[in-house]
Structure formats: structure tokens, C-alpha cells
Image: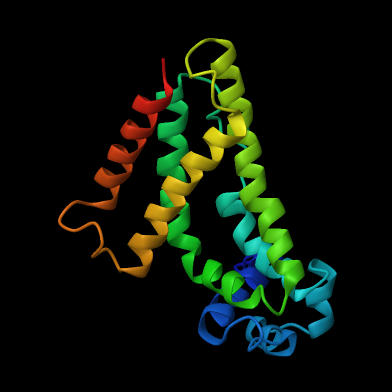
Length: 194
């Protein structure tokens, strides 16, 4: 049995290290291959491009369908509570990579589009399906569109997570991010539930 993780996983681990230390453009596939101990061609047997490597690092952490994550069924409080807390843990892990996406999106518009489609819009669409279902069952106000509800919740969530990361936890002191997220969720639910 091999003591090393599979090559694809080793490439991702090395890419995370190099991207966070040297940036996206500062990381070449040659440097990545050297760190992993493989040829540059071996990288392209696993990934079509450097952008695909970055998206592979981001995607499993954020763009998980609610149904795949097992949180699409239940009351708004249950589902959204799980969604918010799961995303908070994931956001902390991917924040260094997210900064790279934000910085590089000006010169790599495909990266921005991939992030938008695979991460933000997918989460919005998944939430919209839940909100529509809750509206049908008269749990959520019917006068707001499911998409508007999804955008509002995501704005609150990602705004709080971003401020917490940028301020290194100082913004919400003396409360914790966890208590702030609970308060934000309660305020959101109080304004949209029937």
C-alpha cells in the first residue's frame, strides 16, 4: 500500500501552498510539478489548466448542493442554520484562495466567471429552490421572490464572513462570529417567516 496520497491530491495540496505564498500568477506549473515531485506533463493528466486547479481547490468547500450536503429538507430554521454554519467553516478555510480569485479576476476573467457560476450562482439557485418550497408550504412570505431571499441571505452571510476575515476577528469583538451569525440568521428569519 502506498504511503503517499494520490497524485491529484498531492497536486492540490502543493497548489494551495504555492498559490497562497506566491499568488496565482506567481505559481508556475513547473514550480508546482517540482514541489510535488512529478513532471509538468503529469499535472496536465489530472487538470486541464492552472485555473482548473484553483477551482478544484475552491469548489468542494463552497459549491456543494444543499441536497448533496443533506440540508435541503426541513424547516427554514434547520436548513438555513446548517447552511450558514457550514459555509462559515468553509469560508475560513478558503479565504486565502478567495483573495486570489478576487485579485486575479481582473486579468483572468474566466476565473471570475468560473467562481461566479460554480460557487455563488449555484448556492443562490439551491437556496432559491428551498425558499420556493417554503413559500408553497406557507412558511416564508410570498411577497418576496426566492431569488431575492437567497441574495439577501447570502449578502448577510458572506458580508459577515468577509468582515471577520479581513479584520482578523476584531470586527465582531467582543462577540464571536458564531454569535453574530446566529443573530443575523434570527433577524433574517424574523423578517421573512410567517
